[in-house]
Length: 118
Image 1: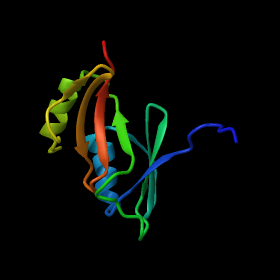
Image 2 (image 1 turned 90 degrees about the horizontal axis):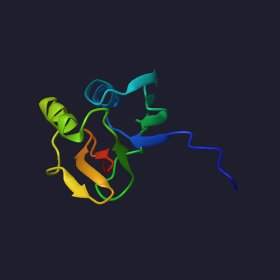
Image 3 (image 1 turned 180 degrees about the vertical axis):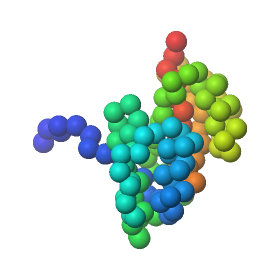
């Protein structure tokens, strides 16, 4: 099988409006569509789906991690998001492949800011 591309990366959420507000207002993604149990947002051409259907609940262990690349420096992005109430798991960590700052959305889905090495 050959893939044509990625259709959507989706995350389970428990409160659709809270999730849409977080991803759009807090993280700055563009809302493409929103229904009662499904919303689609975009960031730099990647479509993110929020699935609020019963039975689709966030897990506390494992799963996908959505890495977001801020337009400004990762330091400025962390400072801005902290000002909006985002709680980071620790400080920005430095690695040979770049810098990472980990946090969660309101449903516990794992997110991180990523800045490639300079």
